[in-house]
Image (tube, rainbow, N blue to C red; front, side, top):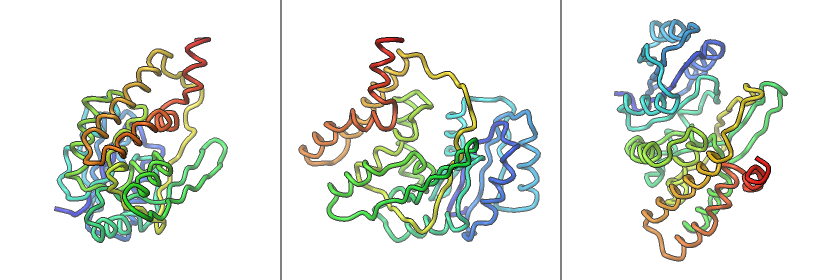
Length: 277
């Protein structure tokens, strides 16, 4: 059994899949596998995945003919893995060659951490603009670290490296209680941030491509409000379950609306749409 599994859900990703798999093939860390959950693609994604499987023992293909919802395919990657450490990787994302090595060594050296995350970068494929978001150096006590994490968190941290035994129950809670693809990455991250059980490093980086879809319709106003409310409820339950002083629990709940404002939908947007539709 490899120490690390990288779960890659794929659907019609042939245009960037080869580049994404080659990035993982170049990793400086060797004790890992790439589990490709191919979700009934129609564009040749499976053939590309089979090429890597045939030429590199670290690549494994789980082909499926029936296409399921994207987030369910993320769950399938997690379910089919059994390594101690686990990470998701979208087929169109990219990282430094030392990504797995640095994060795995971080978890090895910090037993309290359940998630290792790093500098996040975004690349808008339409404009070519790249942005860099370095992670903070955590300092002080747990309460201080908690505030630093909540203030600095990026959605890209979701693609960090987890201890599998820790992320499985959190992911299943998100599936059961928060039924949306939108903002589910932040929902999964939230329990690790408030614990706090995150190791951060700027010694490596992860890049997420953005800007592929233009003119995509957003959710109806009523659904946006429901997503916002359900996100707040999900996070509030995680606060209640956490072993924290009462004062810390109240402080976290006091900032929940602000967190949802930053990570789900802007409250000004919800109010405006509620008025004008």
